[in-house]
Length: 410
Image 1 (cartoon, rainbow, N blue to C red):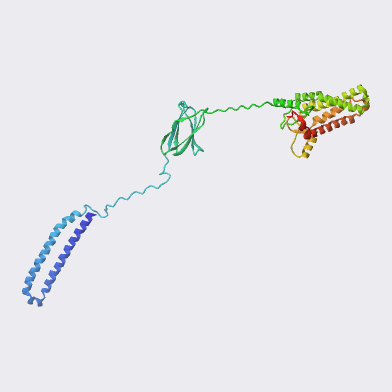
Image 2: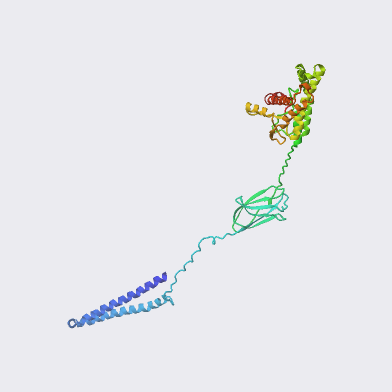
């Protein structure tokens, strides 16, 4: 910039010098032309000589100055010209190359590695530990197992936060977190696993037979007012089915109970007082026959309908207490249990055992009833109807009354 200004100043100086010389020349020669006029030449001849001489001296001085300036400024101007300057050759500043556009290729992902060592509380490496590398605690990126020294390495791991989950047998699961920078080889601090707390739960539950045996013991202890046997009712919510052995044992216990024997004696006395089955006569002999017939009716009906057929048909001879709902629903339930019972499979089904047992007992009674009192099938159905009616009445009492006065119930 300074050299350009210097050249500009010198060029202007030369131009000014030539302009002055031109003006001086015009002034001198213009004056000479005028003096050559014929009219003025004669009048001023003498004065013009002196004036001409003075002007010549001035012109000579001007030319001398111009010559001095020319010789002085020309070398400087020659030196200021750039050598070998060709048209079109300019020293322009270099144009910067355009920066590459930002994009996926310019921002290439640089992966790193994550490594570490899994040890136990004694500092020994844990071999075979399952190490998972997760991102955002959800997606599993990689999964490896530690080597014999407990070491593990994850390669080609993208930069960013990560989590490691370490699972090993007999050790508690452990999770650590870290942040991997681009291109970094991240070395985790030593991961020490603690022994897992083992809780062993032992559920001891009795077998079905054992539960049934306990419930059977409760059945044997159920008595109304603590006296009258009340064996054939279950107050348990989920009663276990009785085995065949238990069904026969319960029937035997019911038929041999002292209260049962006393009840049969009372029935025989009522029959003799009413002279029912007159063929038996009166007196001790007639009473013993009536007692035998009444006991045979009770025992045959109980064994056939409460043990034999239930074992064959896999039905439960007990009444299952309801205890909930409206009185009407409970009443209908109690009445219907005469012809509906629960099977050993805990499903409700027709009570074939009770109905057929009462009919069988009625049929057998024709074998020992006096001939004059036998009425064939009529007697059979009569005895069966009496037995079914008695069962229905007992069921209603069980549902509404007897539970409150039964001792040692389930």
